[in-house]
Length: 474
Image (cartoon, rainbow, N blue to C red; front, side):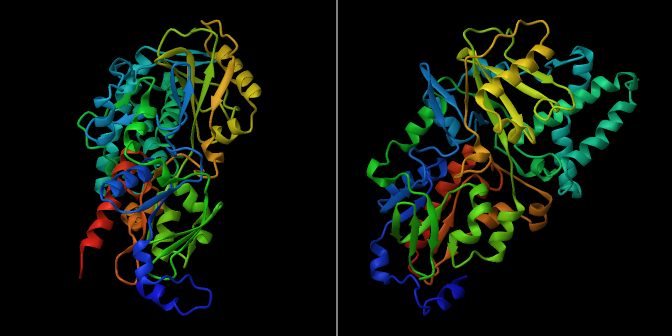
């Protein structure tokens, strides 16, 4: 890449900046999500000039709190994975963790269907089977089955499960539990289970002992964003400026083309989503990214998961969470639907959609969606009088042009590359051998991809990389 950039210097129309001028330019941070904010915080602390270029009119990226009553609903990131990370530390220090709501999580939930409720020993037997799968699939991956899709492994294990303890007579109930489990996993990982490989069980690690997902209170990620961004002056942000071009052809500076004009930069740190890179990488960079980089972008998975809030006049459900399955002919409900009560607003229910249900929900108006969900609840929750909701609150991430999905995961193609996340994170060097274009964001972390933790840590990583290179006089 070093030599390729140098070869482009003589070309007519190339973006040329003298080394003296380049040193006076700011570092351009592309994106004001968690990775971009942490990058800005650390550049500010290091007294390195910078600007954060953001296509939206807000900070946060896929962390998107929306004001509701006396708190905030979370369009995007909702939980914190584990307690051994800086995001949890911020949450705990600011009294944001709802420990009671965290404790209410239950792996033994009944499943409501049109044919009745699956509960009791059926649920407990199946949960005992699935409880061991994460560790089993981790060992399978270590043992050479890293590229095997979840569906292949699970189907084999499920068939073995059915053969034991005279379970054949209960197969129809277990089939529904298996379907619900697969959908739960698909929602958890925002991935199609036919593409999601066992390597994820081996590679993904939040570094905590108990692997708990912590629920936050009504201030939640809004307060976390406020804390992280507190040292960034407002004049460092350039909002409503979608980046359409990243020209690093001079070899010693970067010029951004944005929806609000051009910006000259000493270097750039790209923190956009993997979904954005998948769609725009071929036209975004000049020169084109290396084959290694584009291969990593294409190989990593970037899936869809969708949260929808329904607001009612008053609380009406008795438990904290539910799981339901509609008719197999239903794209939205046929593979299972989980939902739970918002801990700090009992009249507000959050529904979780995944896989083909996401675009199906995206095609519905709010009125149509309320009608569809209400009909589904009436047909499955027969012991409840299901009221009509007042409103829908949602943000369709797969339709968001700056995101185009939820978060990343490992696929058979990415496993074949080795560490595709690290390949994506590898910087592009300038003619002086120092980082010219760097990459941060959850998809560039090799163990806590998918998370705000990974985003935060990669922003920190790239500033350390930049400072180290600048301090290296050789």
